[in-house]
Length: 160
Image (tube, rainbow, N blue to C red):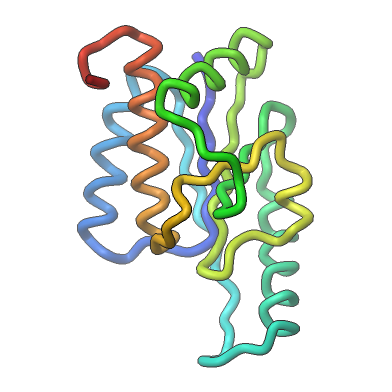
């Protein structure tokens, strides 16, 4: 069984996001071993300078690297990443598993994104959309797409 690790910068507080995460975690338990790790988001002033943002992203990147599982595939969620259909995403997951990758790690950055070094380290830069979404909602969207991918691979009727 593949390990899916979702490493997020920022803590979920809203009950509706927490409920959705719990639901998809429960659903995914039949298809993979899911680990969700939250790391603290760096505090920034109301109107941070680009230098302050860059420094915060670098500190967040250091914290992320310290928690990355050894081996496996690293996927960074970022707006400039590649968009995949649900079917293509499922095929990519299947390909990684066939190649013997037992851990898939997805990175979701803070409200300012991910440090460029983490994006370069990733095997895939994945974009959920060209639209802008709150990074907390991105976590729910990613979990749904990972669940959908496993359902596609298992041939269920979830994906119509």
